[in-house]
Length: 160
Image 1: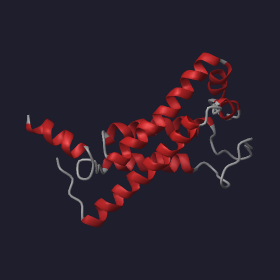
Image 2 (image 1 turned 30 degrees about the horizontal axis):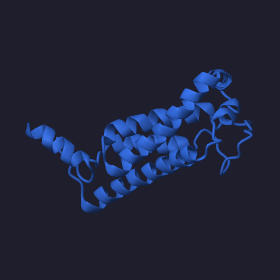
Image 3 (image 1 turned 135 degrees about the vertical axis):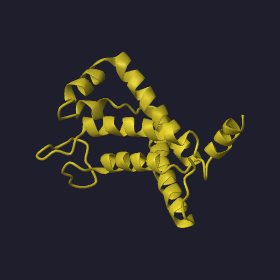
């Protein structure tokens, strides 16, 4: 079923998709270009219900190396997918999964103080949760088949 949007709706959804894509892509590229980057500090700073899982990842150098690789390339590929409108639904689901891990690692709970400073003061809702929810909205209102490479991929697949 083809989604019908007004031009302003379509463009605002695409701008939203590209903005989140840019944020994720840039975060991944910055990590990739920094040879000293590691998630170890972030993982060790984890608090909340799942802190033990994140601490155990940080404690095992081999698992940490895999987690860092997946984090960097996940950010880059998800960001590119959203910007280009390439496999936008899969990119959105992958982005939700990654942002959920960030949220669970550093939940914005009352009286929790993290070594890594945040941009503001949060209670339950932070930028990770907002981007996660926004990606869920973009799954419900897909734009890649209107403006993006999905338009060419899925048009050709539907024609066969």
